[in-house]
Length: 432
Image (cartoon, rainbow, N blue to C red; front, top):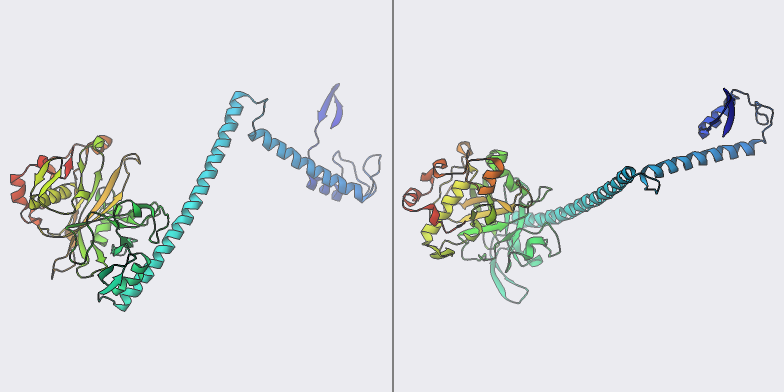
């Protein structure tokens, strides 16, 4: 501190300079107040320096003082003190909480990135195993003994390496040149593989699995094979399927990849399915009617839900008419009773994470001798798909009516006659 007499008053000036300032002063031979230094042993004033050692002490002392001052200033800015006002305390606490939240977010992001990388490394490894089998062309069935000592017959050798690694394996699903290219498993419930990877280890990515109600067997495929997979933020698993929601994303996904492959471990013949519909739907009655598409695994005679009864053929037409009314796009794919279907179901939350909604893709298996190609040039976006009550309220949309039906009924053999004699209110697949 330096005291100075000016206008009869004492003024105190705090000396503030850095180590570089001192070095510059010494080098130039000038003191802060304009005096000259006398070299290593003299000052510009009346006194003398104590030599080089004292100069080094001066430099070190000033640097420490500056650092201490800066540290103290930072602490005053961000660390709460007893002397702080209420508003200042609030500001500091807000900063601390925000800093803590940001730190947690960074940790979560880093952890998620690590998990995603590990998950994809595993899936890449599984794809390489599958590719080796494809290259070798191992399509002749063989008998395999499972973990319980039983014989699981007719498994294709191309799948043996994967099957020996996980005997819940039932097939492989691949959607064109997209990231959907995964092994498919099945067990005795729809929970086990929800958050486990192919090796059975805990993994929030899960594994693609078939609904347990319709076992995959050598003899034939289910009327409707329902596959479940997660819609992950990193774009893996069934995330790409959502791109078929033409209402939000247009027709690009469909025109690029109009077919999907599902091979089972028992056979690869007619493994191609032609995609014909994709819908956004609700799963909770409080938000409107619920279309139980996941229950339509077999088209059989009898009650489906709450006493609604229909024949197997009627159940088929009720199901297909509802799928078509709700689809966000239409394609040049004809359908008839007796066809086999593949359904890909995934979570999709455009209305908020608290609304348990889904996006669902439907495809029809190619028939014997049928060309696998699809004419995508005549596919088109549905201008008004059927949705549910909450959707209409959220977007201020007018609810769907039968006058809004624009799909070509003639593409479904027998549908015109069915719609003329049956009421939508009798549809056993609808709740609410």
